[in-house]
Amino acid sequence: MLHFVFLQGMPSAFFSRVGDRLLAQGAKVTRINFCMGDWLFWHGNNTVNYRGTLASWPDFFRTFCQREQVTDLVLLGEQRQYHRQAVDVSKAMGIRISVTDFGYLRPDWITLERDGMSGNSLFPRHPDEIRGLSARALAAGLPEMDLRPEYADSATAMAVGDLLFSYANVLLWWLFPFYQRSDKRPHPLIYFPAIGWRLLRVRLKRYHSVNRAEQLIAASDAPCFVFPLQLEHDFQIVAYSRFVELDEAIGEVLQSFAGHASPDVRLIVKAHPWDPGLKNWHRRVMRLARHFGIAERVIFLDGGSLDQLLARAVGMVTVNSTSGFSALLAGCPVCILGEAVYDVSGLVHQGGLDTFWCHPTKPDASLVQDFIRALVAASQLRGVFFAEPGMGVAVEAMAQRLFSGRVGEIRYNAQKVP
Image (cartoon, one colour):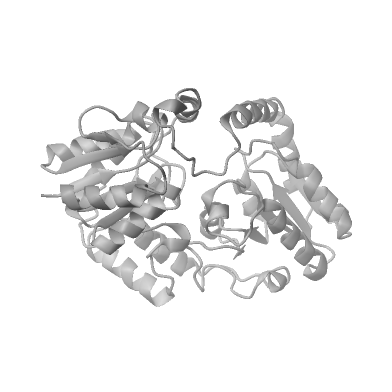
């Protein structure tokens, strides 16, 4: 019998609903909770509360898997502390590992991969392999791709879920006294007031920000590169890049731009829309720009549409943001500084950052289409984590892929599996 063990997931009912569908198909399901936030979103039957230490967790998990004959592990990202240890144990025991998170494609896709994501993704990085997978996807019945959004997620439900999860852990910590957070975000008592205040300020300035971005696009024919900032605490930076702090990436980009970009080129640095504002990135970026003598060529934006900027940009620099997919689909050259599933010759610039400013390599349009088609067939589910009807669609699709054991594969008929 298949036995699925779920660890930490999104702060929503998504995982518990997937578990219900697997139970209905005849599988055994267990959720292991590490903290009160986990318990809030899945408790009762089929759950185990782990209240031990992080050091004791691998032995507990190994013993549990042996005793309960676990066949599958399902988790949100493989980089959380408890998840990394569980992945190591599972690999040693031959347990299948399925990892999920927000989709590589936005806004209404969910990623489901075998073993790991992003820099740890098993998705091929060689163009010939990608073209072969794309051909297999077409042969398997994958319809023509339509990436236009079908489902809307709820930012409110996501924010409320995050608040409930975080403050349950703060206020009721004594129920799981040895729990250790895996994320690098500031403490909830600092983080949530900060991001709430910043989002309010951004909302109040939205008209000004959008106007400034539109004026910038229309005002000058000078070529520009775009550098969208990422969240400093995100695992994309913490686990899949060499940077300890985002300041390091900003310094590297600005120094290279100063030394190698043509004098008539500008660089637009754009803040992440969900940044908590605990660091004044505008001030930090412009201070570095002045240090390198390029202040008049660097523009900082806190708002506006990235898609609009990409439509006129001659290139985009990123550590490894999923916005790279938007750039590739727009035909905009991309240079990455970290690890990413789209780090493929023919998709992104391979000559290094210093050469990118004067000789950016445009993505191969046919390879982009093959890459997206193969990626969708192998690892992307339509749907969202927090709102109906997209949540229900994604629950059904994930349960079906998990039960079939074909996570990360293209052998299924894509017209029958959403």
